[in-house]
Length: 322
Ligand code: UDP
Ligand code: MG
Image 1 (cartoon, protein in one colour):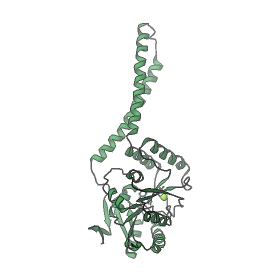
Image 2: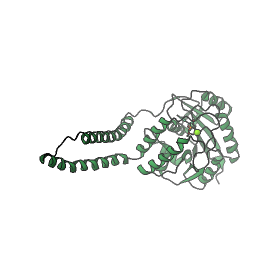
Image 3: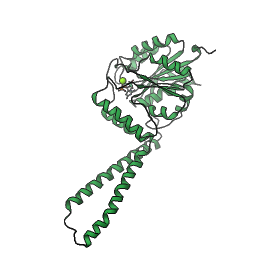
Image 4: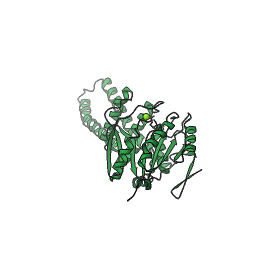
């Protein structure tokens, strides 16, 4: 019989300007996890916070021997912060969650049960609409998942969260992925294995402000769709094909008109045609440009994040505190 104490759970928490949430989250996680008997560690990734987050982490790491932190050299974005944390995690299962307590810690118990029942990945998705989102976010979030599901080969529930449990064998594979602009929610679906989704109702942010601006969300949305599909390229080439066929059919009409002497002043139609095709070409080129940009960034093989400091080094798959 394997007891929970023989298994270790790593919890990875990307944190950007979360000074007032860190201690509270740790307390909540301790209350939730201690009774389970599992050994566990909390790995916080300070993703370029400008507030006191790092200091809070250092204080807590002194207080609790299972609290670790990784300070990134600047703000790399949540998915890279997740990647940095997962790289350090060596538990039998890894759980990722937000630092702002929007992901209810109690749900971890349900995740652990499902994991013990043989699931390799237990992911969560928001039940219904986001009650705490801004008005426009309800629309954009729906559009994003619709667009992603339509344009790419993965299918995701609306409101899929970065709150999930991943078995160590999946983690091992995830660590091998060297993808620029990695989008974990998509990668998890793409990975396969035995997965199950659990709906949850997000809590209100404990304190502070969500750090995603509208422009960041647009970049994330475009990046994620492009990361999972070349379908936009096919779609624009189909549109291109359709209109060039129309143009080819139009040429005989122009020639006949010319020879019959009907070729009268066609200023409006010429301008309209030029403007339309000019716009269409720009659209097609910009879609191609997005993909070329991706190739360019990937081809540089830069590290995906840089660690400025940490209270942990890994030697032979073991944590050593420094
Ligand atoms: N986060 C991060 N880097 C960023 C933005 C956010 O590590 O550049 C973290 C943040 O601290 C939180 C989680 O990602 O733990 C979710 O961020 P947030 O609450 O701002 O977004 P939302 O709740 O809207 O998804
Ligand atoms: Mg949040």
